[in-house]
Image (cartoon, rainbow, N blue to C red):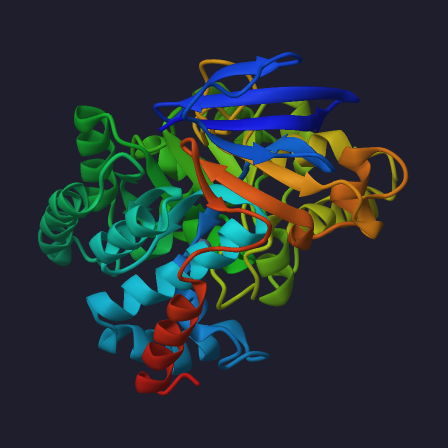
Length: 417
Ligand SMILES: [Zn+2]
C-alpha cells in the first residue's frame, strides 16, 4: 500500500507527498492521495528530511545510566568490557530495539552501527523498520598472530548480517581503531571491503594518546597510517577526527572519506579537543554528525547534538558565524556526505522523512531550521516515515511498551540496572 501525506508545510507552501515502494513518488503542491492510500493529514505539521546518525553503538542503551563519571580507561576496562563479554544475541537485539525506539521518536531514520552480535542488531533494525549499516567490531589487539582469527570472525559476521538483515539493515566492516588492529587486519579489511563493495567505519583520532602512539609506532599521523593501509577511501566513515591536523584533512578530502563528529560523547568522555570543523569544511571534507553510543552520550537525540555541535564550534572559533544553523541541519540530515545516505525531499529519493509539530512552542515564531537547531529537541517530531512506512504517527509507536520492558529485563539480568 502507498502512503500519502496531505497538507504538509514545506518552505511556506502546502504540499502533498506520495510514497510508493519505499521511495518518494510525487511531492509538491497539488499532490493528492490516490484511492486506497494510507493517508496522513499533516495540517499543522512541517515536512523535513529524516536525520542520519553517522556513528553509534546502539545496543549500549542497556548501559545507559550505568558507570557514568569515570575516567575513560577505568570506565571501559572496569565496567563496559567485562559486561560486553557476557552479552548475548538477545541482549543486543533488545538493546538495539530500545535504541531504534528512541531514534524513531526523535527523528533519526538511519544510523551507522558498530557493535558485537551485529546480526542481532540487524534483526532489530529490520523489526523496528529503520535503516542502518550494521557491523561487528574487528579487534586483534594489534597482534598479527590474532589477525587471521579476527578476520575470519568478521567474514562470518557479514554472512550472519546478510541472513538476518534485508532491505533496511546493510552489512559493513568495522575495524575498531588503529590502536587495536595490526596492519595485516587493516589491509585485509581494505581489500575485502573493495571486493564486496561494502562500507567501512572506524574510530580515528579520538584521543591525543592515540595520535602520540601512532607517531611513535609508525612515524606518521593516524590518517596517514590509515591511508598507508589502504583504508582511506570514499566508502569509509571515520568517527571522531578530534585531533586531525591540516595535512590529514587535506588527505581525507582528497581520498573522499567521511568524518563523523560526535561532540557530545567527546565532551562527556573529556577527550580534551573538538573536531576542526571549519578547516575540514573549507578543504571539502565530507562530514556527518553522530551521537556515539548511549553509554557515552547518553542520548540518541540527534537534534539535541546538532545544537551542541554548532555551539562548541562557534565557541572554539570565538566566532558566532563559524557555523550556521543551515549547515548544522545539513550535517544532521546526512547532506554533507553522499556515503551517509541522507534522504532528500524530492521524487525518486528514499521516502525517509519527518513531520514536526510546527506549532510547538519551541518552533515558534521565526525560522524553522534555526528553531530546530537552536531551540528544539527530538520531542517536536510527530511522525517518522522510513522507506515509505509510518513508524510513528502522532507521537505513537506501536509496541513501544514491550520494547522498553524487554530491554529493561535484559539490563537487569546483566546487572546494569
Ligand atoms: Zn564509537
